Each structure stands twice: as structure tokens, then as C-alpha cells.
Image (tube, rainbow, N blue to C red):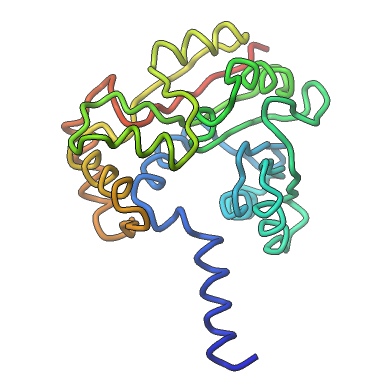
Length: 244
């Protein structure tokens, strides 16, 4: 393999491993989630929809926890396993609607924009409840698209391209979590200002346009916090607890 070929190969691996870190809305999502996930050394954690495993690797090393990543794509799991250089992470092909774990296996379960893809989201929440220890936390984001579209047809394009089965409202999420046995601790919209919403819509309409988070992230965080809607957003973040 030539030096140029090796360089392209390494860049491709780096991109696929850290792909979502280059996208501003993923950084906003994860920033909203982390305080409620509250990872600690020794925690046993499950990530639903682990994709390339980048988050699981980074979080396990940063917080000293063990993370098991699930994804329905064999390709994604193989990719995550190829990057796996620590005993703190593991990856397997499985569905969140039928978790292959015993009752009370985890301290924390989280997922970044995954619930909207499930055929039966309510059952996935019940499975998460089953696999959490008493007092365990479930933290996730899911697509909502509750703000008015700035570019016509965005939701239709998004639904078809990303195989979205359902868009959730905040009241709907809270109701389903409570029905599954959870105590909802916090719920907030993400991508709740028209500026961040417009940038997200551009990415949907022009597939492949991904704004590096470092360019505008401080400004976007300020707009979200200062002028964003308190209830409506393109995504919803929820933190819930299984009663002890």
C-alpha cells in the first residue's frame, strides 16, 4: 500500500469513528445529555445505537466505566470492534426492542437519536426499564421536528432518508416513559432556535453538508440557551430514573 493510500485509509477510519463530532447538532445533543447521564467509575452502561463506537470508547476512557454498545447493523458493529483497543467496551448486533441482557444488568442506558427508528418505541422503553438496576438512569434524545419548518419538505426528506418511523413530542415521551415504569427527571428540547434549526434543515436538504461543530458551537449554544423555545425543538432530550 502506498503512503497516499495509507493516509487516505487512516483519514477514512478517523472520519467514520468521529463522524458525528463534526456535526454541530450532535454536540448540542450530547451536551444536554451528559449532566443527566452522570457517568461514574465502575458504572455498567449500555448504549443503544452505538454506530461506530466512538462515543462508547471516549466515554469509557474518560469516566472509567464499562460500556456495551448495541446496533442492528453488522457493518457498524464490525467497525466499532475494529477500533476497540480497551477492555472497557464491547459491541454486538442486537435490537433495543429485545435486549439480550438479564434483568438489572446496567446502571445507565443512553442513546443518541435512536428511539424514532424503532417500530415499537414503547416496548424499547420497557426493555430499558427491565435491564436497568433499581435507581438506574435512562437518558436519550429523539427526533421531534416540532418547530415550524423553514425549508418546505424538510421532515418528509428526513423521514425517508433516515428511516424515521415516528416523531415524538415532549408530552408523548413523558407519558410513554411513565407507562414503562420510569420517573421522568428532566425533559428539554434541543435545536430549539431558528438559527440552529435552519442549519440542521440545510444538512437534511443537501445531504453530506456537515458543519464542523467547532466553527459555530459557542454561538449556537448561546442562542439555544438565551432565545430558544422552552418546549419545542427539532429533538427532545429526556432524563429518567427507574425507581429504587
